[in-house]
Length: 291
Image 1 (cartoon, rainbow, N blue to C red):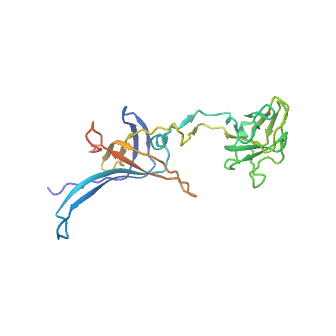
Image 2: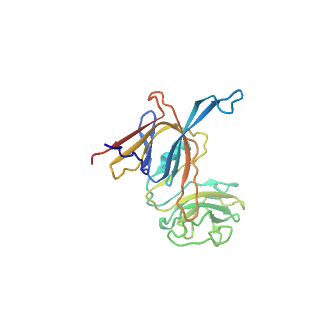
Image 3: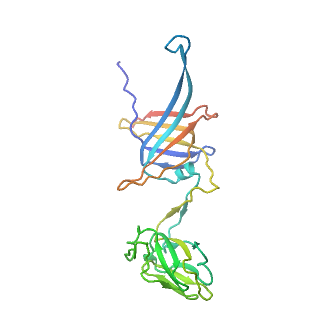
């Protein structure tokens, strides 16, 4: 009869995180560089007397880890590894600007700036902006990046300080002034305008979009929940399939690497531990389909 065909595992198809309690999937990742389970044990020798060799060797604790390299950032990674769920926003067909965030002084006041708004949606460019009072009645506007300057009317920085307004914008009571070529306007306060030179505020803007996401990492309210992970190898041409169900996983931290002219790759290590209900750490299952 001879030997049986060797059993082999090829490639990686997906990883799926799930809630330990409800068993509901948290999300799936399929752009995977590598996925490796390591079970590193310790061997404890018994030495004594004049023998240069152990008299006996016993096995100690085994540390089981899951090492991942991913070239995508599904939402569940932030929830499971950084303790914060991502907020997904609906499409913004009219573009958007955030609320004003006061910086130095009282530029945002009845005697200064009342609000900002979108006035020409096609020109709104993605990024963070800074407004600085240039005098009691004028402001200069700066951008932190030119990433999206080709959106709508093409623009450039005015100087090396990242200013985007060639001349100061005049703020008058209740009146609207537009930041040229950026689709955003500033409305003056209700009182007599009298700003303090150097006072600041910031805001962010998003162009017309089909979806946007945001998350603040590092908040005091973050909660880290352990999770399960199901790993699927690539289906082979012989119809063989291979999955690993990791019952309980614990992760903390998610590196985000940006390299010139390369897709970002996240490498992280997750600890796996014992599930008393299932009486194990992980389960391996293989099948060879008939078709």
